[in-house]
Image 1 (cartoon, helix red, strand yellow):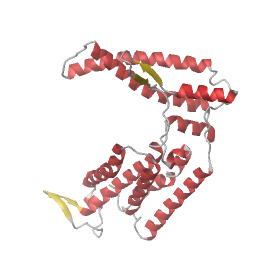
Image 2 (cartoon, one colour; image 1 turned 60 degrees about the vertical axis):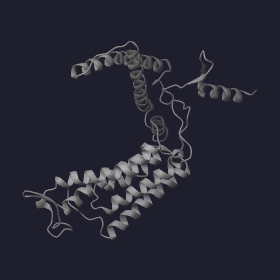
Image 3 (spheres, one colour; image 1 turned 180 degrees about the vertical axis):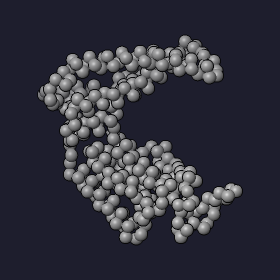
Image 4 (cartoon, one colour; image 1 turned 120 degrees about the vertical axis):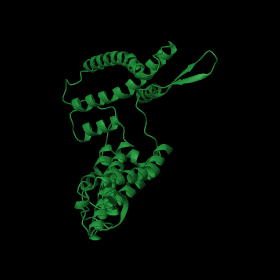
Amino acid sequence: MTASAEAREAREALQAPVSDTTDTGAASTIVDPYAERRAPRGGFLYALNPLAKLAAPLPAIIALIFTRGLAIPTVLILLSLAVLLVGARLRARWVALLLIGLPVLVAVLGVSFGVWVDPSRIPTGSPGASVVLVEIGGWEFTLAAYLIGLAAALRIAALLVLSLIAGLTTSGPELVRALVQNLRVPYRIGYTALAALRFVPRFGHELEVIRAAQRVRGLDHGRGPIAAVRRTLAVAIPLLASAIRHAERVALAMDARAFGAHPTRTERTVSRWRARDTAFVVLSWCAIAAVYWWGLTAGFGGLAGRP
């Protein structure tokens, strides 16, 4: 057996889940809660460089700050949803949130922002200025005010959906590796931030273990606000102690591996910028430019007031 074959088998053995057989003979799988999850297959977004998924919607995110009107944000939302649904394997919950929850959120935010629109700042000749939707005493909620609030809500929704292109298909380690290897961010900063991010799932797992241990011991603080404070303190103190121990171990492990002693470090996983990344960024920028050219030439990108 060659050295490469032995290394490949050792790597597969380390990545494979550990099987444990109980007294009943049933095999159970023990999964490391802190291990990095593999990206699901079936979507082209997972194969792209994380920096490409950040750079592609960046011009639209910047331009949306200065955009007014309903048409351009709506088209950007639809294009972003199409990219997400085609290029990512989303769970049913995320699909429902994007297709059902997002329109509901936009409608609610449109009303909320429209209520705060100053009626005196709405031009009398604007569409819907004379259409009163709700009237309470001397206060009137017009269609023009709702359209202004809806435009602001659509801009927020467009920013959210555009950011989800990278957020739903990129993990923290992938982003850090891309920043360090492609943008030449100092690895002392990148991997320190990565170590801090890895604390989050560990703390979640530790919190579940602490709560399970307290339930096994029959710890009951009762009900009411005082009991809620007691429950919080009973969990916070052991969680803080575990966090301090884990931070000390991480610091010792980084010192043992000479972290920060050299200007560069070797990488186990290489993050490459490929031709498909360039093509994705260029096509995205062209699509964004086409949307804005259409909106501005058709008169859909003018100023609509500020909520």
